[in-house]
Length: 509
Image 1 (tube, rainbow, N blue to C red):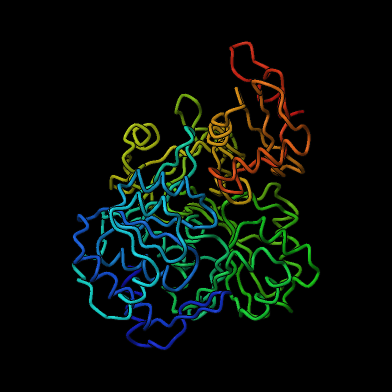
Image 2 (cartoon, one colour):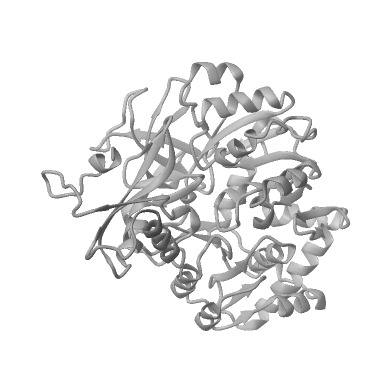
């Protein structure tokens, strides 16, 4: 399934059909989305941006923001989505620096530093004027094959985000499978968009909705920050397909009104990004008898997800933790030991993904690409491979069972986080001499992050006040979901016999 062709078909046959609705009150039809992205693509074509150079799309959820992403695809440029609420300005500027930022499309308020980092920055008023002026893209320039469709920057162990390069073929191959998940006809349904566009979970609902003649219902940050308003919006949404992290569903389940009565059109829950607890799946199946629950798995490096499974009531009672799925067509999952040998069925090892949705590696980071990516033969064709760093096991049915990270990377509230990234940013604070971040687990899941900090001198404030001060300083460089909840101050960090920080000891404190 070719994504742009699917949208073109709906825009031509039913241009007045609603494509996008946001809780900020914005709506857009397929006809508007198509014509606006055509005009913007024509402008980009004429702007002189070097061929195939990445274009940053900065802002928050809006029809114009989505039109800009599509304009990049139509002009042959990978888009780099940066959400203004999820990505601090220093990190946005860092990303701009890495990609060279010949062009930034800013669909909402932007920091001056970002404008300084870009060769050209178009603000909302200019983008709107261009979209309304009209124009046409050149179909031969649309991204295709091994052209990059988008670059998503994820947490990096050195404190600098790294860009995952997803090709048009990877995107289209993923989409062809995603629209089949749950075994329901998704044509014309409304899809919940909970995740910011800088997080790859958003590709699930965006691509499926617009390739299925559906409507993308975007929950903006302002509404997500207000539970009462959020439930009012959900009740009026007509959502048929729910895509989110399990944590978001858990938060909603706290309210007894979160039932089929609130969302009568809901037919499918689709989860990815973190562990789906048995209790969460069981509660959803009980409260939403008309809906299916699908658990899925996959890192950003393999284009959102590569495995999925329908979760049944029987499964929630028998399998703990729940399996994360069977490999999609075009993908092979392998589990290997430390020597690279295949693990026997049921034995845990590192998960290797081989297939036609494995990305093209990291943007301008050949060192990291060579470390984690490779090639293999699958059904007679050479495909890319990715060493996930995830620990898992395959059962006799081919179901993958996920068992956490083999390195310092964790999944928390659906976000993939390098603990080293947080530590590096804490160490940059003037008063800090050393730092270690550990996850605090409750009932087998990460409840919050704890920062263990060594200071060069005693803090001016102690206890809660010191924690508040550190959080405020980190908010300038880290997204909110990467800021530890708790800070513990040490004279020195405990060490293992081989001279490394004793993380296991710290995790017990």
